[in-house]
Image (cartoon, rainbow, N blue to C red; front, top):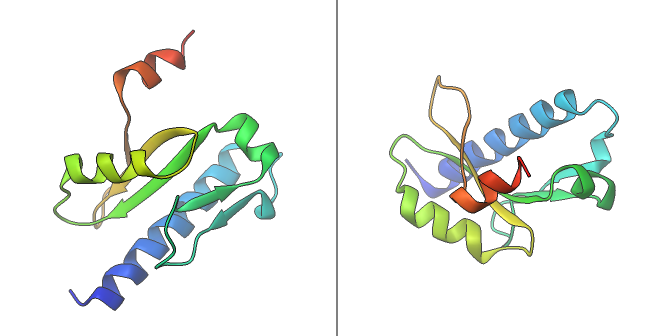
Length: 109
């Protein structure tokens, strides 16, 4: 796959995830979650302060057939000051998430 096509595929996944999050949290508005343009360093979804209070994560979104999960997790930890969350999928599959165990356990405290 050409780099341009791969970036477009990633952008589509980030846009799809934005829609899922807005549907899950109907009190958020479209402007509360922004898809970062491809090629820009940092998290793939930018959250408003209001959205950040609900979702204290920084999102790394991957849409690939063969995911190097360790590389993707490392990339997710480089960006942002919130808890890193890797959200990934491949063609014709739902989204999945990966995070470190401490972050997962904190959700229940």
